[in-house]
Image 1 (cartoon, rainbow, N blue to C red):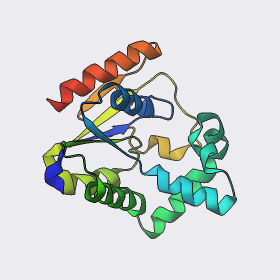
Image 2: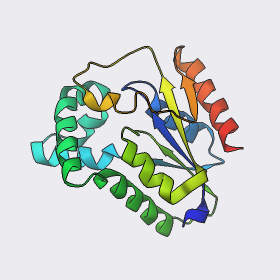
Image 3: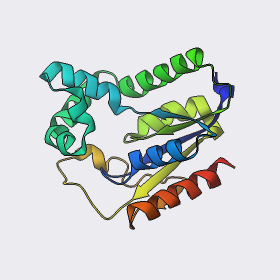
Length: 184
C-alpha cells in the first residue's frame, strides 16, 4: 500500500489560514495528479453531529463551525485522553480502504488538511517515513486563546512554510507553484 504513495503533505496553521484552500486549489487545478484529502477532523465532526444533533454540513461551513468550535475541541480532547491516536488512525484506515477500492493506478499524493497534534505527525511519519513533509501555512489572523488546539504546533518546526498574506488568487497561484515544487 505504502508504495502507491508518492508524497504525504501535512498542513498545519491556525484556523482560516488556508489549509482547505490549499487542498481545493491543488486538487481542482492539477487533475493530472491523484490527490487524496486526509482529514483528522472529519470523524470528529461526524461524532459531534450525531451526539449533539447538529447537521454535519454545518460543521464544514466556516461560519457555523466557529459556533461549535469550543464543543468540537472539548470532544476531541476527551476522546484523545482515552486514545491519543483515535483520529489519525481512523483517517489512515479510511485511506487504506480508499487504496483497496480505487481503480486509479497513478501514484497518490496525500494532503492532510488539519494537522494539529504532534502524535498525528509521529503516527504518519512511522508509516510513510521520508515521503512525509510538513508545511505551516501562515496568515495574519490569530485565533482566540480559547481555541487551545490551534496553538499545539505553534513552535513545531515544519519542513516548509507557505505564506498566505495576499489575495485569494495570489494565494492559489502560490499553492500551485509550491505543490509542484515539493512533489519533484
